[in-house]
Amino acid sequence: MAGTYARSTDALVIGGGPGGYMAAIRLGQLGKSTILVEKGPLGGECLNRGCIPSKALIHASELYSHVRSEGPEIGVLAPDATFDLAKAMAWKQSVVEKERQGVQSLLKTAGVTVLPGVARFTGPRSVGLTGPDGGLERIDFANAIIATGAVPVQLPGFETDGARVVNAWELLSIPKLPASMIVLGGGVSGCELGEFLARVGVKVTIVEMMPQLLPGIEADLSRELTRRFASAGVNVYTASKALRLERTPEELVMTIEKEGKRETVRGEMLFVTIGKRPDTRALGLDEAGVAADARTGFVGVDDQMRTNVPHIYAVGDAARPPMLAHKAYREGIVAAEAIAGRPTRFDFQCIPSVVFTEPELASVGDTLADALAKGRRAREVRFPYLALGRAHANHATDGWVKIVGDDASGLVLGVHAAGAAAGEMISEAALAIEMGATVRDLAGTIHPHPTYGELIAEAALLWLGEPMHVARRPLDAVRR
Image 1: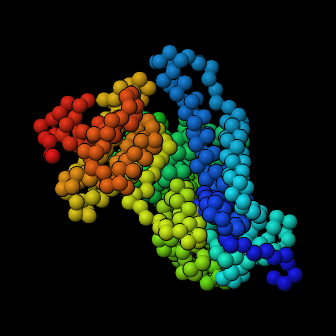
Image 2: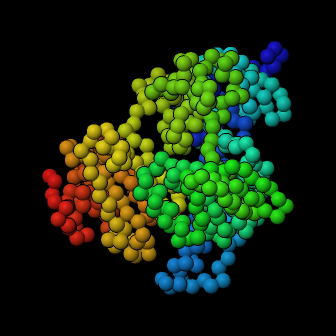
Image 3: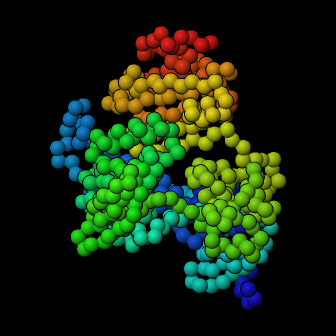
């Protein structure tokens, strides 16, 4: 790159999403000169086109839906309530911009230099940076962190066009609600945004290739959501393969195959959300000598997030599944501390997950099937929201909390919940598993009343055979 401007740094971070900006902030805190390169807005997919904007729109739709559905029963009357998509989008964007400004401020405070543009490795110690104006720059680094995130997978024959066939990024900015929407993919994004659309009056049909919605999640959680979708009028096709898409001027017609039979589903628009792949193909990994899986694109790392090139690290969606922002946060910190010579590892017992639907779904640790497959003497119980005072006061009695425990040791192995505030409660369960807590520990911890958090303690008491707010049955015999 002769003739271009050059600079050097202790650490180069490529990508300003959750893993990247957390790594850069921590590097700055630890006294390392740090450059962060980002080709788009700071915050990456999570802040700009994923977690944050989707939750803002989901919140708006929940307010609208709750006022119309439960409001009259509890004394809140708003017969003329309407959903204004333009105002909801403006609210969503204000949230995104506020959060982005916060990230920018934190990076500045940490002394991080942020450069816009696209970085590509030109060797094991350098990258070429193409700026927004097309200008070229060389950056030499002692260490680098790959934090480039992921991009949506395209399915041949179902390619997005940004208008009638959209991905999640495009759906979060649609200017007008369609009358009907086909959702191809019943994963987290498909279920969350599909339900958002259904709440505000769109006729929604979800097509999922696997036998259940939210493949990989605890089966009872998936069944709970499927049941709720049915009552809300969302059409769900599981174990269904999308064969082809016909785009007529009037509508989109998708042919699917289920149990050997073909049928068609129709909609004004199609939302394609069949997964993501690491955004690593254009990074010049070969020039840096960094190994990546040829099929998936994931960059291999060790427990300090080092690649096969010891001074180059990878975090977040670029490194390995699961593709979760909170996993990327922790990986970014570990990589930064490793660069600074701190004793650190990405070492965990569990990673919690949350699906922001109604009911809210949260899961951490083993399912009963997982535990039994590992040879555990495992057992599970479910405690219902219906037996909780706070749930009645909040008109939110649907749902349950399940605890999976080990009869031999008493250890908490897993917690799975469907219902209001499930995502807020799951952190307590994650801490319990990380700390090696027993079910008795959870039962003996005083939880404030009236809160949803009491569900954890109540489920623990039920597991122990000592239920306080549900009737004890003969099979609830005390185990210890």
